[in-house]
Amino acid sequence: MSNERTLSIIKPNATKDNNIGNIIARFEKEGLRIAAAKLTKLSKEKAEGFYIEHKERPFFNSLVNFMTSDLVVLMVLEGENAITRNREIMGATNPAEAAEGTLRKLYASGIEENAVHGSDSASSAEREISYFFEKNEIYDRF
Image 1 (tube, rainbow, N blue to C red):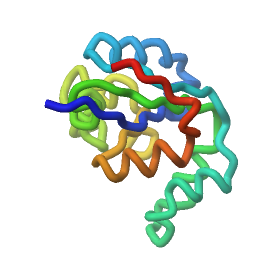
Image 2 (tube, rainbow, N blue to C red):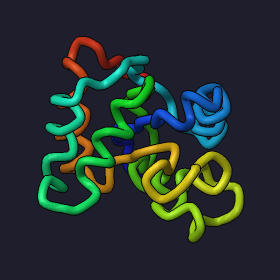
Image 3 (tube, one colour):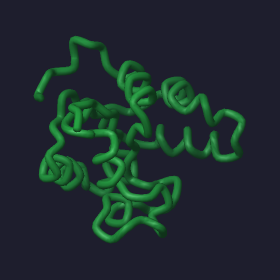
Image 4 (tube, rainbow, N blue to C red):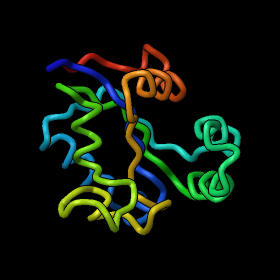
């Protein structure tokens, strides 16, 4: 077991539905700690840059439009096996396939409006965290 960090985003549908506190409480209940957090509205350019790997996919524009439609909460979560734990807590990308009690089963509106994002690997976590946070904005809570 290792301590690690992961990026988490509470997406616009979950912020609009006032589920920020519920989602954060779940992360903390499950043993993850918040090392950094920002409430913000993503610009089109920032969202496009974050999702650049999906640029050629048919859902790219609707994803960017959704992610810029309202506020998001950007967080760095840390803890033992934070990447895997976060992905288990979130549930399957498609909320229809997500396990009962997972964040996506509880708070998602659909496959695109799936309430939360989490890094899928250590390399993704490093890249995604540095995309949104400066080193001096992240605090050690291990």
